[in-house]
Length: 299
Image (cartoon, helix red, strand yellow):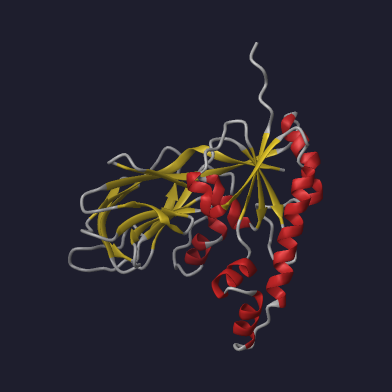
């Protein structure tokens, strides 16, 4: 009989702003001097750094002693190999959950808010002191799980990208992007600042900001809804480009297709991470739709 593997807690975090500042300037005093010369103080960054460090200590102490454990930084996510039975503990702010979600295939994510005074905690609702109880509940499959829709982009040369908030298709410099858009039974050649296809989770951020500026409002999906929402940013009308397919809901089972007419600079990326992208040269097609995988948040 095969033995049951010992659970592994994967703690995901990011460097604090204080760590980044000190690394850039060499020492704490040099960093302090740099900020004070611009009318700013280092103490606020130190406060937030200590809160993150305190939350990480609390999480480390909460992991059962018999469990395996590993801590990784956000910058190492693309090189890390997750195991099917991992439990991911994201310690920091909401964006960290979006960063890790794209690399998962059903593993539960327990979000820990390191600084409730600074971060909303929509995706990181828990405090460090609750982690031990929640980890044991996950292991016994007695925890609440909230599933959230993700968005999937696949190019016709086999590249694939997933995101929790939105997929961006456009030019990497955010200058005019040229492409053919196919959506909702229609097709249009467009020139724009790019387009986004957002989930219900992303609809509270970038998509909502775009929607507020539109004369034609779209009923935005909720985080668990299977629908996505499409927005074309600043479509430009000309003798060869149109603006009719500017926004709309993308129901589950439907997709948005974009055929690039950019010789260079065309990109597809998710959740604002431009380094992890699909390069979209002339003639390449990308299909964007709701992903089969869903983020599983521990509640």
